[in-house]
Image (tube, rainbow, N blue to C red):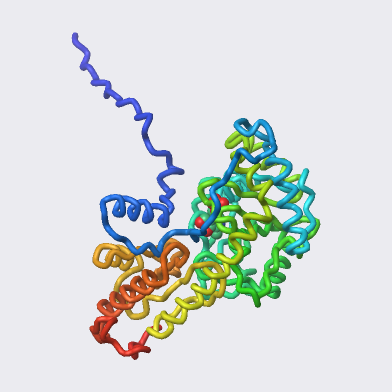
Length: 417
Ligand code: PLP
């Protein structure tokens, strides 16, 4: 008697290209994705007013590597960073901000501060540990926390730093701040930093301060480096970069300052992922540390003044920004526009050839804002961009005057938030 045959289902082998659960939850960096689109449009001949780039362009002399006295420049270097560069950076933090740094044990140079932040998070987070992020946060923080298996805990932008205790749970491991802030330009006050520091101290948290824009501060404003509150580095980490202050974002050189026990952990990750920062570029920066800063500083101040001026233009048009004075970013309100920040940025690019970054990239509480960067365009072109932003806000605000910005009286009377 024939037994009924049970068809054995043929299992498709899993695709080696399948997405992991982790990567399914990771987004592209929205600003970079948007700027890739801008690069493509420009390559196709579109004249895009680019107010979306995360850097300022400076006139810098072309590097002359022939003058470098160091040998072995085409090779790997010390995985903590070239000793000469570490010493220059340690001296800089000590002289500028009164933060004592042992260049041999408390500082690590790597391929960009982005990598430095990620490696710190990887070194400290267990699965499902929480990291508090203050909106608007720099958009890579939450994805980096997720990449490390942690959970980002977002704090809406209208919550004061003194009210963060309610966000701390038994799983909280760290708080990340960006001082001065991308995208608002906010410089943390001494009182705010003390509050954050005390909170970290009370709950045994690590306070990570990303100070990548520390030179972009108006001359009359004080900048307090987090390390000044914690010279022993018991619960603070400083992250910084050559990208913005030196105008060499493509060179990929950033660094962190932390307690030597943490630096030793990060060093292992650095050795397995990166080995070392680019040697020849590190050598150039070590040798020309003060000279390049002497060249960029006046240009940085010009950029900060430009930011102030653009803030004035926005205010005249009735467009508000979240409070801030530093960097080259403005975080502008969409007022009564019926568009989400993503729709707004897409339409602005499509209809006016002006690129900005949608506020939603910086946290859920920021969808009524866009980030405007004034670091890479001439004042005339920034003005063109601001006019287009104003026009689109008006065109999409129910009941607003549909005047073209050229015809419109200034300041405008449209009600904005
Ligand atoms: N931190 C902040 C706040 C930034 O805005 C950026 C870049 O835009 C970075 C870090 C990354 O800098 P780096 O070029 O050193 O990786």
